Image 1: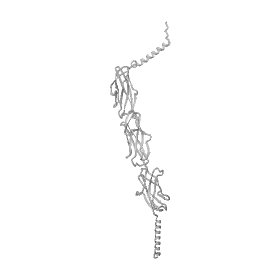
Image 2 (image 1 turned 90 degrees about the vertical axis):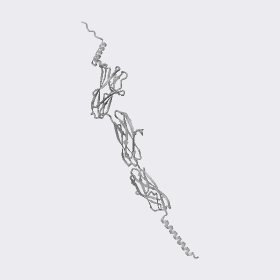
Image 3 (image 1 turned 45 degrees about the vertical axis):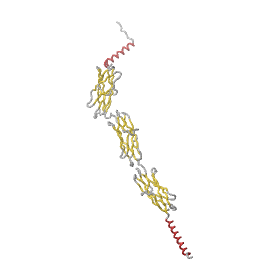
Image 4 (image 1 turned 90 degrees about the horizontal axis):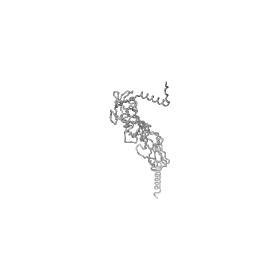
Length: 391
């Protein structure tokens, strides 16, 4: 009996590998090994919100140039599917090896669709070749993304004479580019505007999907706006998506004052050494409360000026009278003098000044002395004429 010939080790290895490959090819089948037609997409499972449309980019691969027919299988009631290519609605494409066609499938999900998953199958057919692509669509009420508008500093504070400027960030976190109409509204009499940053005339802006832009908001208080908080409402509306935010301006008041007199007369008169009463009026011409207003005066040497009351509080658009008592020096010569008044708040941030002319008349005492001297002189002259007139 002849013994079998044993193959060398390298030959045995090659034979084993060939057998393995043969088994694999047999399991896959000759059609799968070289189908000649493939249909795929980079994102076969997506989430979409009710009322939105999702788009799948379809890739069609062929091993030789051919015409490929496309069809969409089961679609839920109310849903709409559209195959597009080259700007047209299509049913088939001419696929080439070197230039694969650009094809997309739009799936419109009606509003009110409950959350859940649905599978739609797209089929490619050319002659004896067929390939099917299942697409899973998960309906999620929160899947469309959202639009937000925020500010790092939503509250500003300052006087009514100031213009307040806010910078807002408008974020488009949806899957589509959106054009927003901008609007802003403040209290009655205020001037409020909302524009894309750097565009003082534009009232709309386009924000690409997943990107942000900045909005500049300007608010100028009305004339005489009282101190207190005021709300500014800003809105960005694209039709399908909108967002709004509230800003706040805390007006601290516009502080200013004037000094005058009740009858607008800026003069007084009196005698040297005698008290002269002059009433001055502190007017609050701003929109903020004036607290602790203290009047003072600068007068000639040895004169005194006192005030009653020494300090006052004055409400916006109101006035308070203060009585000043001017006492000239007892030896003041008759004539006109100037007393300079000043009123200021405790921190001197708000103040006003006024000059008053004070006329010093001849003192009554000296007038009586003069009259007495005249009478004495006349009496002496009369006596002299009476005694010596006959000589």
